[in-house]
Length: 125
Image 1 (tube, rainbow, N blue to C red):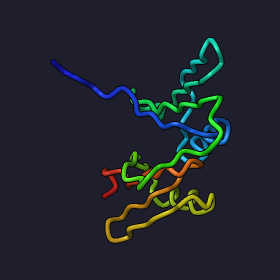
Image 2: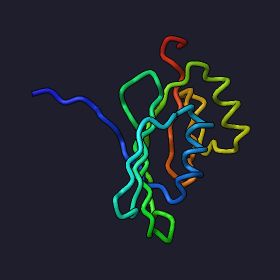
Image 3: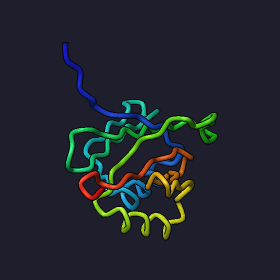
């Protein structure tokens, strides 16, 4: 029996704001959208154009408050082909929330408070 990754899911409070963030910060594009028949939720799948792995953003229409992320001890990680250009973009966007220069990584925070790790492309290390 073999399993392969399909997608990761994040629930978002403001779908339009999240879609704009993921496009600007990480270049992710919408690949698929599912709207509930009763309009109670929308699922939007985002892709990087290079892999089959997707990020699913779930928006719940009746949600009235932001999500409580607890200690937020989970994260998604992305490699950047041009790490310095990515860091400059994220610094300009004001979304860098933590840097570990000794490890050569940093984290950005999305509009809902999820942390996303940015790594240099291993080919450049």
